[in-house]
Length: 125
Image 1 (cartoon, one colour):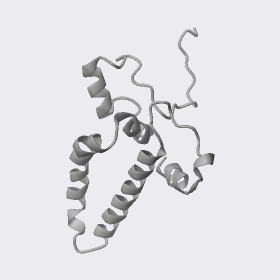
Image 2 (cartoon, rainbow, N blue to C red):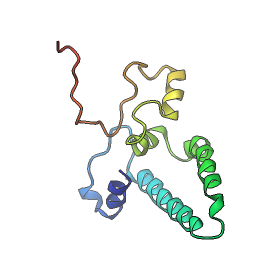
Image 3 (tube, rainbow, N blue to C red):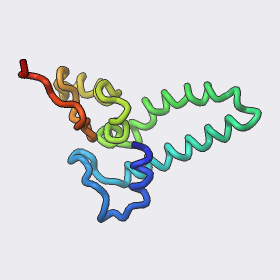
C-alpha cells in the first residue's frame, strides 16, 4: 500500500483512482506518504550509524506521534485510508467514533480499501 501511494505521487491527478467519498483529496494522502517515506529513510540511516542502539527508542516514539500528533494534522477519514491496509478494524479513529456512537460495533467502519478476496459466507448453509 505505501508502494501504491508512492506511485500515486508520480501519477498525473487525472489518472489517479477515485478516493472514498469521505477522503477530501489526494493532497493529505500525498503529504502523509512523503512524511512516511522521509521518516523511514531517517530511521534506516540511523541504523547505519553509531546511534543504531537508539532504533527501538525511535520506533517507540512513533506510537504517540501517530496517536496524538497525526490526528491533529489529518482528518480521520484520511488516516483511515492510509492505515486501512494494516488496521482492518480497531483503529484509534474507530475508538473515537464508538464513543460518539458513529460506528456500528459489529461491522466496524467503512474502510477505504475493502478486501475483495474474501467472500461472505453469511446465510450459506
